[in-house]
Image (tube, rainbow, N blue to C red; front, top):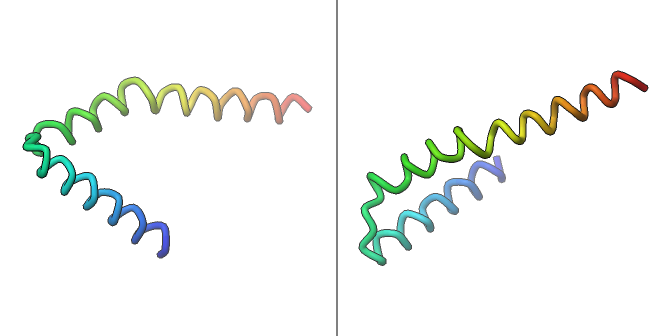
Length: 58
């Protein structure tokens, strides 16, 4: 429950900072989510997969 509250607080802080900087949040946030799912998450899953293979070999 504590992690959920922290995550919500971070998102609200990000939203507030972007609004204060006059940045269109309805464009920026979905673009960042799309970019992270295309480029960052596959590397994380690859890292987990390699670690799984290494532990199975032992």
